[in-house]
Image (cartoon, rainbow, N blue to C red):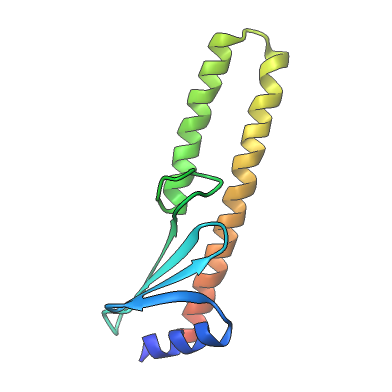
Length: 126
């Protein structure tokens, strides 16, 4: 029953999706997917995933939480590399803040997009 409601709503709002074996994969822009597992009628599981080439992880597939951790570790590594190579803070600071702004902007974008669709799916199943 839940899968029928979700599929009808996805068709109604013209989302691109794949439905196979009780799993619905909704394809969003910028290499983002929402995976809805409706195999168990009592419990619907909703996950997010970044696939293909995206602005946070490149071509590595992972969910948004792991992408935030991945970018944090990358930021620390990138910072140490720049500090070791250039001892001048005036050269290092613009790159550091540009990288932070880039990661924050795309993290917020992907997070808001996935959470809003997850909330819509929850409302459709009620």
